[in-house]
Image (cartoon, helix red, strand yellow):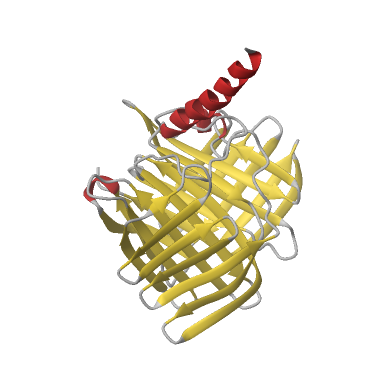
Length: 331
């Protein structure tokens, strides 16, 4: 009887976890990277080559709709000001492992942990990933909020470092990358919040440092509150400062200022956009089955980072290939 009970429980527990993930939340030590099955599931890759001054951003999503699931996909390049985006029909996102695929009208998506291939019109990325620095903590990027069901938006920086090799093409131009620095993250939920702000950088000279922050209007039923979280990796040490830590933010289209505090740590970020202006990226409206262009991201902004522990500065540096973003959607 004990064996039978164990077999039964082995089947019940995964089903309960799957139902729980369907709410948007994750169990501690779970894997937030595969699809949860919410209205919008998004994946984002950012790689840079400081020697050449190049930055590549790629993104795709799986948006649910009664008429058929569809994807918001985009590739953005710096230098050059290139943004290629599309609505791709028939997307398939696995809920057991990280696999996102779509092939429609000449547009193509094939994404997993180890590689990324996206073709949108005359622009494409074909990359393989190695030497990943995976997320090490039991709760996701949102801290304890990662396990709260039915929030409007969840965020998780699942790869805080790594290498990317392959090619990026646009028309008759081809960029080759060997061991470019990589960052990857996830967002999911009912859709993007009414407004949000975001930033990421990992090019701080020779320092093995990666930082990301994400903020927006968090909703749970009638409750609404602006929330910001910061994650810093200093070598093999990962700091996550999210509420109930004190995090203050002030952001507009040209400046991002974040101060996050706990009793032990203080992280200050000061970001500046470029005079060339931001790239404009698509934002999905899942229920309307369309994208809107209301996501403004500087692909090569300037971000100054200072980290203090018990009042003593343990890292300070500046990146000039930082991603800095602000966006909104219709109420």
